[in-house]
Image (cartoon, rainbow, N blue to C red):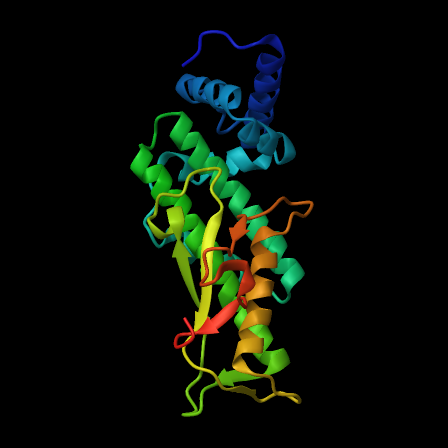
Length: 251
């Protein structure tokens, strides 16, 4: 830990610590000197954490009071929590906002634990990878349902329902994501066919291209709440010259 912070950073740290103490109330004051030293260290090293705590003063209190800041997550914990958060989500705009708020909270937690020495490199890269994996999977689940309502449900000639398969390449594929990584993805689906159940049917490929485009928007677009993960689709077969989603046979 550092012995002395620059004056401006010290003042900001003291202000944020005071806000945290006041939020916890007189019955449960924050008096942990180790935690305060960690906060000074983390804020000195991470503009992202500092700006996030300035933007949302309740964020750190939530991480501390829930004990999430002090405990390792199970691999499935991100997906379980995000599924609960998205349970009542009804449209793409709300999906994007909820994903970005969830991502900011969990990224602050991961960065804090990494910089404060509470998590080693393996845990940090696995946490980042599981966070990305859950955001992709949960967003896809919601978007698929909404697209089926709008465009019909995709089936093959044998009347088997078709779903989009998202393959993770690069660092995410190896569960080695870091804080600045984008996610390299490939979109594919089992078999060609047409959608059913809507006023106008479209081909499976057209359906999954629309779905893939919506998934990219939900993750990659920068809004007032930031972004979730940058998405790179150039590793798909034939790169940018190919269509966004292809069948298994085409791949």
